[in-house]
Image (cartoon, rainbow, N blue to C red):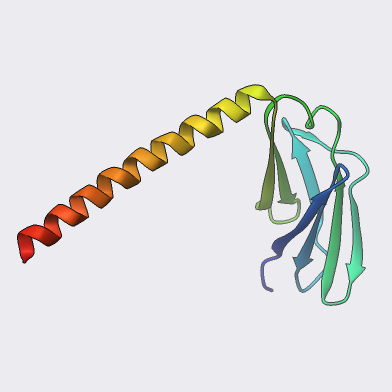
Length: 119
């Protein structure tokens, strides 16, 4: 028996969709803050199963929210998705980008310096 594999498809109009490839129909549990989400749909789809997760309003609010998708039978995590919203998230992302730019500049300078020393 092969393990189920989850491939994200899209997140649109408060519905997250994915595709699960597995030998048999998986027993999927989708959790947010440890609680199972209602109205999760799993339907046969060609070479696997289509997973539709209606995302509750609580997840679509300010902050960072993670939804985890489990195979209830094997107790293995199939995947997850994260929603980041609100003004603090924007500030965090901008500061992270600034840090990455600074590190990239430092690496470029070190690389150029090493190239000059080797010539």
